[in-house]
Length: 380
Ligand SMILES: *Cc1c(COP(=O)(O)O)cnc(C)c1O
Image (cartoon, rainbow, N blue to C red; front, side, top):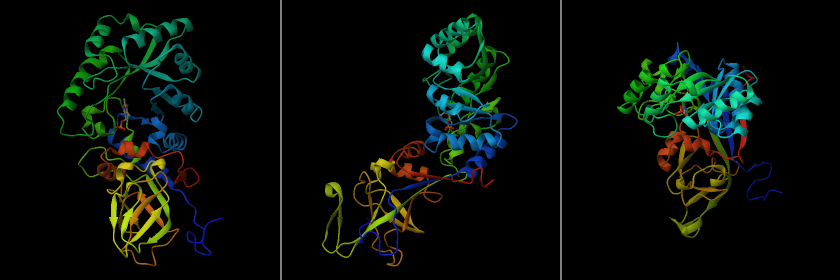
């Protein structure tokens, strides 16, 4: 039973937030990137459940649009993706960390990205036990100092390629530390280092350097294959520049109660926001358990139609409170849909307010959200 002050007679309010993912926009973004990168090929990075949006529907839509190379972070993600796409090439960034993961690579036709000398030696030894040349990628670190062979280790491998016997190196890659920052001189240093070292590691292998941002740094960054993630999902590829990508996600939630404040006081946990008489508060069914970040308390805002409503008080686990004193009474009622994230209030905007990055805003969108996919196979 829904209490009457929550749902006026005759109206049904369904609580909880809904994430709407526009698969047509996902495909349009991938095609925009592919055009920009051509003649280089364009892969898709679908790690972390396609940045929180749902790996299976996203990967299916992209495969149908012509994408046939995918990257995930973990072997388990690769296994899940293989269950969805029977024919695609799938690379696993973290590589094969054990014989069990190497088995997984073979069983599901995944290709590990080998990130250090130890990984190369172990995967080559595993290949010998199988009596097969196993496909893989080699990662060279050109300035990120995270994963990948150091330039010295890469040089050693070029002088003595014996450790690669038994491996079928399909791809040599590196990763930009500042690909989203067009003015950062490290980009050109990484490009030059990659161009001089990568082709000698495994002659004939495809070369790949660019993430989303790298695609916009110029053709010199494209090599044979580009690896966008963020821009496919609508995030801005280059910080501080107009975003050429289409909006992909919308997060909405209903008002579950409208409070007319008759006594001045405070709102929410910790009593962090003072409120006067005659104010109105809209209570909305979304919270940090859905991925609506705690740091948006007293800082974020949301939209009721085109009216901006500031978040007041702390974010609760399941609820937020919006200052709605100026909203015309007819609009403000239980069941009215509040937009928390969408084309005019983007993940990048929210990230700036919350002190994080759009990537985190997307990947935090929680498992409790109701998910709706539009613009997919039935529509096209
Ligand atoms: C996540 C990732 C990408 C994709 O980066 P975006 O900035 O999301 O385009 C590409 N390459 C590697 C190695 C990654 O880890």
